[in-house]
Length: 213
Picture 1: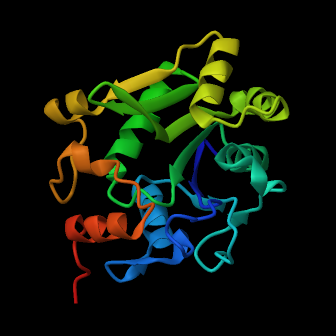
Picture 2: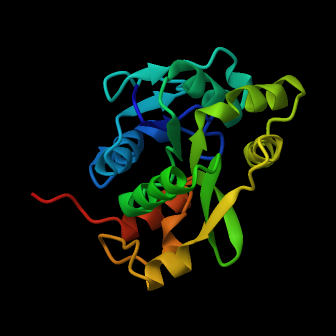
């Protein structure tokens, strides 16, 4: 059985961007390619969850039978499609995240056995990237069935039902201890930039290296 699998969440409507974010170019490659590369650099087989556009040329796509349920629906569809014990979820619009952070979160989850593992910055817990144990699937599905679609609150409810606290790892401490580093030496404050609007894409381009000719 596969130990861990990675999934890019690409089911958003991209309303603020005005175009499908997954296919927007950054440093010569679409955002979906950057997200998949992060997971693959972390040593994970990578798939795409909940895509609204044809993205199967980039990686296997797990369809979301009810895309109106938001990213939590995509997460449940991905977990249901996989036999892996651990699943790592990354949104398509966070191209500045280092693969080293994903690697560390997954290693910590494997070591501790905690059901939900994510990172924080300046005391704020970020919903993604997240490492989930497959055991949370029925609990997340119950949250969806109850009409509660918020990912973070669903993670909290699932962890509580399994009698595990959510594990939140402070990025600052990981950097200071040398556990995690960014290949372009970007400060952690830049890692979690969400490319939601054209101005965000311009900001990401400033921080992302141009491809080597």
